[in-house]
Structure formats: C-alpha cells, structure tokens
Length: 318
Image (cartoon, rainbow, N blue to C red; front, side, top):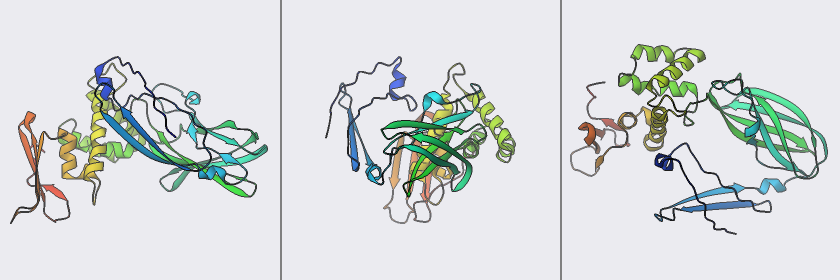
C-alpha cells in the first residue's frame, strides 16, 4: 500500500532548514495485520526537486504470538517529572499498548548499561481485553548521563513477553549526539590541543568522579557557547557532530575520533579539497587534505597497507 501527500512547513529563519536538532513531525495511521513489513519513505522538496529516501524494516509478526498482543515501548513525553530546569528528570514514564487478556498481571523491568543491569522494578496492573494504553514510572534521578536499554518482561498464559527500549539520560542543554558523560569528556581532548584549556585540567577531569566531570563539561561549554542567550550551544553541537561523523567515516582498529584523520576533521571540519593517491609506484598510499581558509594542508600515509592513514608529520602547534 502507498500514499502521497503534501506538507507546508514554515520556519522562522533560514538556518533552521539545515538544522541537525530541529525536526518536523507528521503522522499517518494504517490498519495492518501482524507480519513483517518494509517501510519506504521518499521526501521531495517541491521547489528544488531534491529527494531523499529512507527504508526501514518493521517486524510486527511477534504481535500474533500467544493470546496477548503488546506493542513497542515508548516514552510518554507529557509525563516526564522534573525537579528543575538544569537537572536530569526525576522520573520518566514508559508506555505501551496491549490487548487480548483481562485481569491483573505482574511486570518486571530492568535497565541495562551495556550488559550490566543497573536498576530493576516491578509493578502490577489491571489489563483490559480491548486495546488499551498503559504506562509505568522509571526513576532516573539517580542515574548517570548515559544511554541505557530498558527491558520489560511479563508472563501470560505460560508465554513470556519481552520488549525493550533505548533510554538516553542527559542534562538539559547537552547535545543529543553525546552517548555518556565519560565519553563526552574524553572526546574533549582536542579542545586542550587547541588551547581552550590546559592539558592538566583536562586530565584532572578525565580522572575525576561524576560531579567533577559534570562541572568541567558544563563550565567549559558554557564559556565556549557563541550564543549564551539561546537554548542551543551551536559550537558544542557541531563538535560532537564531527565526533560522530569521524566515528562513522574513519573507524577501524580504533574509534574514528581517535584516528589522525578524525582529529583533523574534528578540529578543522570538512576539507576544502582532497587528493587521493593509492596506485603510485614506489610510494605508500597517501591522502592530502587542503584547508584554503587557514592555508593548511595535511598528508595522511597508509604505512601498513591496512587503511590506517597516519599524519606524515606532527602538527607543530600541538
């Protein structure tokens, strides 16, 4: 099945048309039988005719297993409990839709950091036979800045049901691209290289406890915020966007942001021009990045032949 429609989007300023944070949401509902589906979305800018296509596989076959049907977990945005604008939420509510069974039933949820369980909870709720939405609270105030996996389990009619949901806990104003505070502080290393703070201060924060990391992180980015009177910190968002792109493009035996190309990309951004030399006689494969605005070039050489390009010479200012 397919559907076409037109949406008119009005924005307050042109920069929002290329924002990595702002989004426009539209909703379509379809009645489907439990099965495996592939969703294809093609978006066309009617003025420029530029097109983007996204494809996602959706497995709804599990809805047909057993006497009870339960949908995916989701965060109930309007029920997030906060104690202050700058604090992490006290609690969030997790919702799900289910049908097929009537009566009281017990549930258990576990919050994982990687493979390690960090929080568990139990609750009992009165199930309705008809389709109904349910929700339960998860206290997050005592959690660290991190990305977790929440797993909900229950047993009905001798069959175990399980659903899971990634949950990101972060401070207000921090970039959505940051996975956890430990990684965020470690990835600030290149700010020390470029003179934004002393290396000893960076190392002290890196070895500090949670509160020391938070203080270092928030105070540093507050000082570097180019527009302190706005909610967004554009420099922080751009920095961690480059970290993410470096990981996507240059990861190999180690994370991409730790590589030489990742370092230069994070500090200087996308090069103005690139030369690639892979098949020349009597030379190792090498790549040259040009940055015309700062009159710099960087040469990366693959000394091992395994795609691990390293700077041919150290950068003097570092």
